[in-house]
Image (cartoon, rainbow, N blue to C red; front, side, top):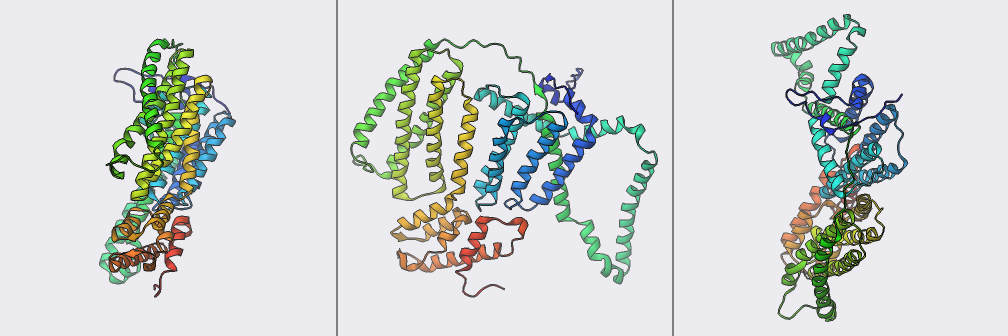
Length: 511
C-alpha cells in the first residue's frame, strides 16, 4: 500500500481562517481513510505508555517507550509506502541509548536531559524521512522544529476529528443494531452504579461486601491517572505523526550569498582584538605558572571576573563562523580571518577552563561547574567542525553538532557526575563541615550515595560531628526506606546502588 506524497504548506495543520478554506494534505486524507490502523496503533501506544510510565518516571521501562515511539512511526511510514532511510537508524540507536540512561541514574536533571534528547532525535528522524538529506542551516532546523512543536499542540484535535470523519465515511457499512447496543450499555453502567451505591448505604452487610469494591471503582484515583496519561499519550503521538508526515513546500529560491567585504571587516577587527587578548593570556597568565593568580586577586574574584564573559565570546565566535560559512560568498581572505578567529577561540576556551579549574581547586566541585567543564569540551569539538566547514562547506553542521552533543552527553551522563562530584570533594577536603555534608546529601542526587556512605569521623578534622552524624543517619534512612521495595517496573541502577550502599550502614535493620 502506498500513497503519493505531495508538498503542502504547514498551514494545513492549523484550523482554516474564517472565510478561507485550505486544501487538505493528501497524507491527512490517508490518515482519515485508514483511521482504524493509525488510530488503533496510537491507542495501543497510549496504553503501553501509561503501563510503563504511570508513577514511574525513572524506571527500566523508559527505553521500551522510546523504542515504541520509533516503532509506531516506522510502522506508520511503511504502511504509507515509505521506506526507512538508512541514514536515520543512528538516530534510533542514540535515542534508545538515551532512554536506557534514564534507568541508570537517580538524577532528575540528567533524566530530563535524556528524555529531551530522545524526543529531539525522534523529531530529527521524522524530519529526515520526509525531507531527505537536505543541506539545511541551523536556522532552518530551529525554525522547522519550532513550528512543528506549535503544530503538534495545535493538532491535538486530529485523532477525534479523524475518527468522526472515518465513522461518517463508513457509517453505511456498520451494523445499525450496534447503535442500540451502545446506547443500552451507556445507560446500564451509570444506572447500575447508582443502584449499587444506594443499596450499599441501605444495608450494612451489603455495604461491607461491596463497599470497598465500589469505592475503588467510583473513586479510581490510580486508574483515573493512568487513564488520563494513556489518553494524553494517544492524542500526542497521533498528532505528532500526523504533523510530521506532511511535507512543507519550502519554495526556496536560490539565495544570493552576501558579499564577503562586510564579513572581512568585522572578522578582521575581531582578529586584531583577539590576537592582542590571546598574547596577554599566554605571556602574562600561562607564562606565570599554572594555578597562579595575579597579585591582590582572590580565586573567587578571578574566576568570576571573566569566566562567563569568555564563554559568551566563545559562543559568539562559533556563531559568527557558522553564519559566515553558510551565508557569505567564499573568499580566501575571509577564510583566513575565520581561521584566526577560530584559533583564538581555542585560547578563549582554554582560558575559561583554566579559570573554572582554579575555582574548583579552591571551592570544590558542584554539578554546574562539572557541567560547564563538559560543555567547554563539547564546544571545542563544535569549533573544530566549524573550522573544517570553512574549507569543506558540504558538511551538514547541524547534524554534526547534534551527533557530538548526543554522544558527548551520553558519556557525561553514564559517568554518573554526582558520584564523581562527591568522590572528588570527599578526597580533597581537609576539614569536614555540616555545610559540606548538607550539600552532598541535599543538592546532589542519590547517585552520590555510595560515596557519601563511606564518610567516617576518623578521615578529617570534623566540626559539629553530632549534627553531621544526624544528617547522615537521616540520609541513609530515607534512601533505604524509599528504595527497599522497588518493583521490577521501577528498577533503577542508581537507586539500587544507593540502597545497597546505605543498607550496609544500617545496624538495626528495618521492619
